[in-house]
Length: 299
Image (cartoon, rainbow, N blue to C red; front, side, top):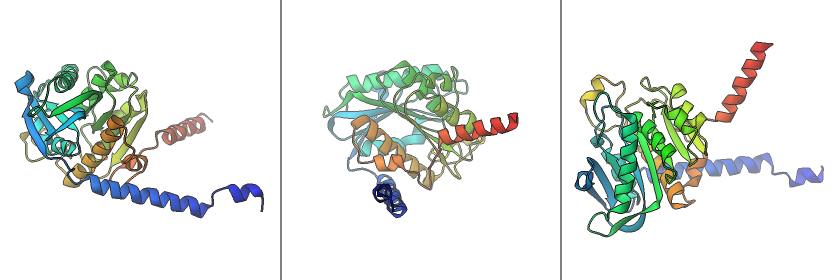
């Protein structure tokens, strides 16, 4: 046996390490599906000049914050439990209710996300015991709201993280805007999405991303899985709410924003591992496979 073989980690040791990582990720996913330790307050953004809602922890100074963009035809009430969940974990979560008609401006919704961040960072929230750190802000969204969140991040370098579910292309193009986004991104694609299939939407955005990015695919999940309750738009938009998917989305977005907005490493093991409900897509491996296929075809 060579000395190098003695120094090299054994296959058993690597396997044990991988299993521990998977177990840790599974436990964190389970923990983060439950509400956090903070009592939550709800407010109306219209009081400071923009229609929408804001959910905050009951108290806290220098908190992280996320502005969330709604999907096509979806009112902000469709995301109330997601926003409340983020707030329960110490993140101020706000969602403008503008551009809710059948012909929305994606660019203007992106501008409203930026305005939302400016409002919640410059205005003392709640009874005065809540404030947001302007260096700890991110954006998120669903469907075209996710695409608008990308437009916002491309325009505003102070955005520190972008997290989306079933992001859809926008006008101007979200995947083109992604080439200017250098902050971390997490994009959750719905496997059964017939409205914004991953290949031309979430995957295209992730591949164009200038900064660190992760794409995950959620099996047996449709475009509207993240929405809550009944709404007439389901007559026009394919998909339906999925409680299991909602729990997974809440956990992953909570872990993502806490990690990248506050600097904590507590939830990083969840972000580093695939889980059954949201498998990480290896974009580099897919690229390599595509290159091999093109080479073989050329021969």
